[in-house]
Image (cartoon, rainbow, N blue to C red; front, side, top):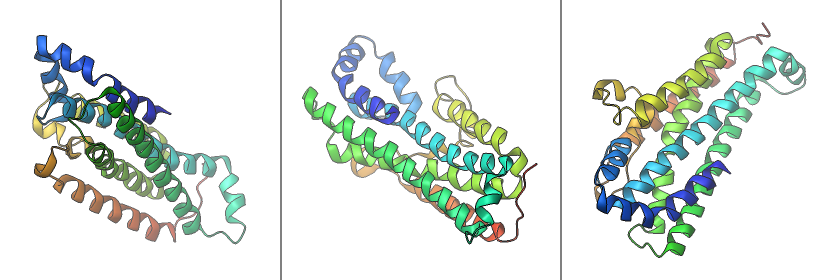
Length: 234
């Protein structure tokens, strides 16, 4: 629902924001500072809105991993693992849940944004670009899923506090760092900073590739280490 709401805003506000930006150029400059790239007004607005959709997707990934820790701490995970379900199977099922949640958030936002843009008569951003913008948010969300899964395996007691802190710092530094003048080296610490901005054929996907690779390595490491990890209810 949150993803769909941001998608609706991205489409329904495009004409209004274009009119406002025509009289006040600082509006477009502010949006560009969020996405870190220049494009048409509608492209910039869609990218800015979807940067927050990416945060929702990352929050879903974070909550999926946190739910594992909650089940473990409450002792219900131990009951499940006393059945033929292995520790690895239990971990992987939650990671799949997180992946599905990410996909649902991004797909809902893209579908609603494409429809609302079409309804507004704004043809400056195609439906394909809208879905590409949504897909570009996935690597950052996968970073949260993979890295926090590894943290859950290694440091379960710190997982919940560190998980939400990781999201909060990523949002402040990555999404608002440019707006408040943070240095580039600090902004580069946030996964959201490296999310590709769809600008047609010139889009740089290198950040997405690196984040995807890091997420895969983190997930692989968490699965391997989970084989030897005992359930921690404390």
